[in-house]
Length: 376
Image (tube, rainbow, N blue to C red):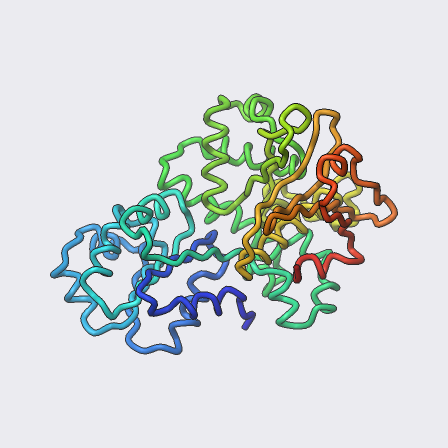
């Protein structure tokens, strides 16, 4: 069993008078994690909102019906809760009328779930995000050096649990994951009919990881209008397929502020989208982008799981000088260049150092990355 770091955080949040909300893409291990946690406890009632009967039960918001099912159970789990209309109100009814239960909701999309529970459960919930398996989790599982030896595989096949545990069959399984389950919530909950356009958008974004994303150019390439592209990107982010990294800057005359970069939460999914599983080191033109995506994503996992509060950015000015990753934490600025080839290390832009003379700077390469993605 690969232990998930976030498990400890969730256990500490149990029976504190708060609902536990666990977000994460489908197939990242939410159900397995909650089953592992609740296996040690008694009187657990489990509902799967992918089932029609579960949705009808909670959409009824009938307290007397709830009582018939909840009874003496101490924990109520609703898996894939985003599929239940008005789940926030149903959750509030449960919390208000069953003092001794621990309510746990999982969701593969914040499109509906977060919006639905925001007001009804204000101040009455703990929220967590579960990502694909982290480098740190695998290092804890079979040793840091062993995981380091798998680095090339991770850059190609990623960290979804099913893939990590079935690496010889990774290509087929990744194609199934990316072709079927991945967009289920987007297509069903938002009634998107242009699935082919969504896939073309993802392919376009996959080729642009680490680059500034210009919505007008993307829209023209995909064959959609700019507003639709922005909407689809927002949905992909809320279902944990991609994430946007904003620009950092406090000097609007010299620094770009409104641009975004887009990365994939999992490189295996990214590579499946463009159907490219060739060895990472053979991809001369994009190994740097894969490395950048890998490092930033693993850093974000580390910050989230260890509850380290920081803001993450990239930096770029109008002279096209750039820094890959900026972290603002406890009032301090940390600037990182991310380079696959240690021989190509370059000095950080003088314009940045002049504007932020107290910034801590460092270059992350395959020679020192482990410390960056596992420690502050």
